[in-house]
Length: 66
Image (cartoon, rainbow, N blue to C red; front, side, top):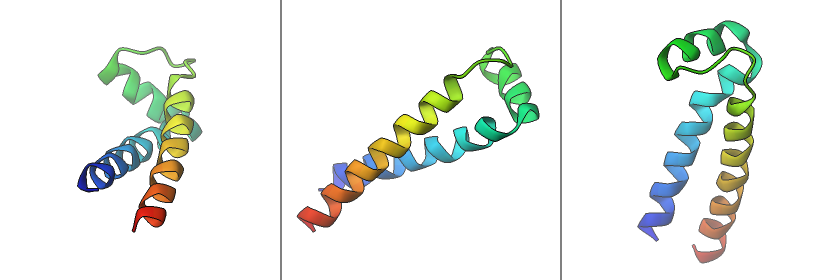
């Protein structure tokens, strides 16, 4: 059960890091300097939405298992 909680928090942190890049071009530019990605990339959107999906699934598992 602890592994599920750890995975939940890791996914939440990754989603929180990617969220600003989904709505702001300047953040994508800054992340591009750090992660060597282009400014017109959609990778942050894909990562953000997949992490949100994983967070919802893990939260449901946590609620069901208790």
